[in-house]
Image (cartoon, rainbow, N blue to C red; front, side):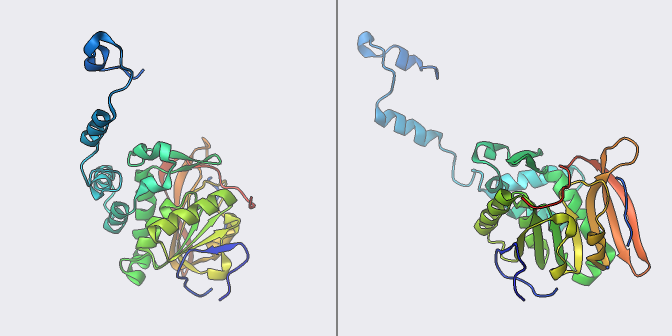
Length: 284
């Protein structure tokens, strides 16, 4: 199948390609440097001394941001927060989150916090990502049909690509849509670095989904809307599940809305309060 206009391919692709709306809604000198022999101030130490100290200060092998121990500590915190879906936790233990954020923020990458990724967008907290992906796995029909895989997944809002990298490990095929061109390109590079070759990235309008590859076993949105786009509902297969932040009636806050498509129609349930960037139409 040819690639639809606006789509960018990361790697291996699958082939193949309808309701109701749900409103919700100076550096200090050491004593040695301050009192050198001869009584002269020495602003810098000899090169060999500085090099020796730098070597001693270097972290031991395996304890840097690339180590599995760092990711495992993050996973332990996520688990302590209530996440129990093992496929999701295993994926989080494998994907190097620091590669998906600005280098200036890399030391914060494994904290349970959202971080800016540019263009007024953020990478979600690990606990929130784990919660949303776990909700997808809790669908009996999805699990029974795909075993330990989510099957074919549509992600709305690629962002920096971190969640897509997780989905690549727990789904057979992922289509991820991003409306902001610079983020779309950034995500392509990030996913190439981690070898997510079963992800197809699309630069497009997430509100209209991606009909050429529908239906999807699971749909997840990383942006919060005022209502549920009809296209998402139409592109969800019978027995599939959709998880998205939606506006909550009354106070205007957001909640996670879960929609299951059954042979009789659609069934919805409301879950955790969340705060996501707004869902917008169009492509930039």
